[in-house]
Length: 245
Image (cartoon, rainbow, N blue to C red; front, side, top):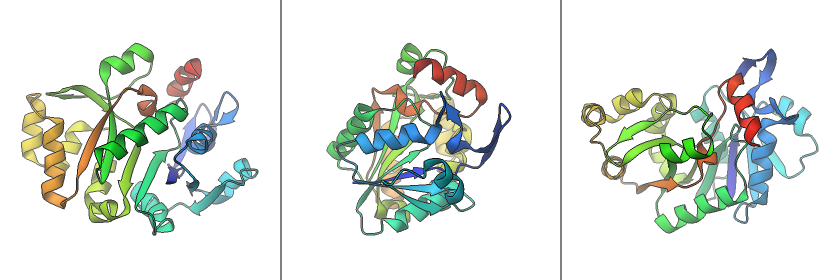
């Protein structure tokens, strides 16, 4: 299976570190290196492409002969499509962000295994709030209250090339609102906003909606690995996650 790492998440100024987020040091190691090493250790992944600022990434990862690099575009969705088009002959692709340093081989392999069992074209991991707080109580996450429970989204998807091309426009909007539950529901429609406010929206309803609108089988994978949802947005996040590494 082929994997795409999104290393072009823009410039950040965190604790006076000015540069790409992907190369911000965590315990002296570029953030993205943790993700690269984990995906290379997976029994399912045989090739990786990193989409980002090629010059910067090669300066920091120049000895990484196992990688392919693609120059980033202006948006996350464009970067995703760069990777998808690079692996245009592949049916299924794993896509991950560069800022989930707590992941390890078992996390990735379990998500892939569960996604394969689901036999879906679009698999997205979600993690229950109580699980995140039990293992990483200091980490801050955004949670959505559904009828099934309180969940946060992961930073990895398994998707077919056909699926992402079919739902490219919707995916772009969902990415834009990925940290805003109300914004996400506005993308999906007023019915979802109403149900979300009443905490009556179910995971199954979201899956059915995508099926009916795009003729694609989508599956939310309820993950038991909170590492998949532990990403970095601020300097405080780095300090918190360094404690758990």
